[in-house]
Length: 419
Image (tube, rainbow, N blue to C red; front, top):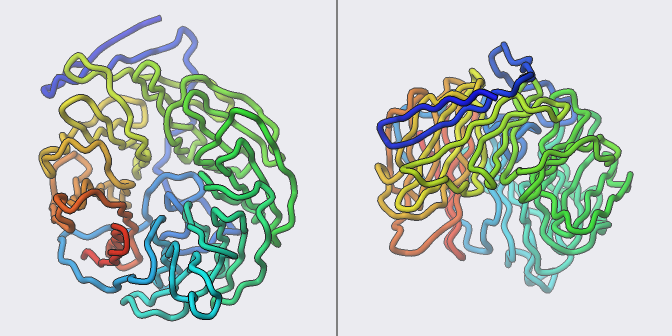
C-alpha cells in the first residue's frame, strides 16, 4: 500500500490511500443534472437539488449580494428549506402553523405556495394534528408535492393546493431523515425508527423493511435509479429498490452524495477520511485529513458536487472550521477558514450549494457568503445578528440566478432574495 501526504499553508495534511488494486472510476465527463421523469423539471425540486443530493444548481448564482425581503411567515416556523417550481414559484413549509387553527381546531403543518416575488398563491394544511415537516418534501411532475410529517402522515398535494391523498405513514409517528423517489415515481421514506418504507406513486404501500439498530439517514439514489444509499453513523448501506441490502461499507459518518458516474462520496469519522466508492461498494480512493495535527470532525453538513466533479464540504477542528474542496480524484483544490467571514467558533453551516459555474454559496450563523471555484471570496453579507442566538437557514437558486434564502428562528421566519 502506498501513502503520500501534502502539507498546505494552513497546516492541513491530506494522506492519500491507494489500494494495491485500485478501483477505477468511470468519471470522465462534466457533471450535469440527470433526467428524472418522475421529478418536476424545476430549478430546485428536492432536498439537495436532485435525487443524487449533489446540491448543484443548473443555473449561475448571483455575482452580487443585493437583498430583498419578500415574505415574512408569522403563523408558524420553518423546519425545512424551500423548493422552487417550474416558474420560479417558491414552496415553503411551516410547522406548528396557526393558519388553520380556527377552522381545524389545531396548529399543524402547512405548505404555502408563493409567487416568485413572495405573494401567497395558496396554502394547505397537510397534517392531522400539531406537527412538523421535518424533511424537505419532493416536487414531482407536474408541480405536485409529496410531503411527510412527523405525525405519521404521507400526503400528495396537487398544483392548485388540493390534497389528493392523506395517508397514515406505515412507519408510524416520528421524524424522517430521507425522502426520495425513483424514475418511476416510487417513493422511499427513511423514518427515524429503524425502517425504510416504499410507496407507489399513488401512496400505496409497496414494502416496509425493519432493521433494528439502523436509524437510516439521507437516501440519495444512483443515476440509473436502481440503488438507494442509506447512511448510518458508522456504515453506508446500498439497497435495491425492493429494500434488499446489496452491500455495506463500514466507517460512514455523514450524508453521502453521488456523482454522474455513480460514485458515492462520503466520510469516515472513525479515521478522519473522505472516501469515494463505486456503485458496487468498492473503494476508489480514500483521503485522510488532519489539520494542525488534529483529526477533523465532520459537522454533518452536506457534500456538494460541482460541475467538474469537484467535492466541497465543511470540516471542524478545535479552534476553527474550514470549507474544503477536492477534485474528483480526491486531491485538494483549496481550503478556506470560515472564521474569515464569521468569527464565531460555531461548527454549523447551512447546506452549501454550488452553481453551474462552480461558485459556492453557504451561510454560517446567518452570514451568507460566496466563494469562487478557486476558493476566493466573492461576496459576503450578514443577514442575521448572531448575538440573537442560533438559527436554521437554507438556500436554493432559481432560474434567474437569484438565491432564495430562508431564515427560521422561533416564529421569526423570513424569505429573502439575494441577487
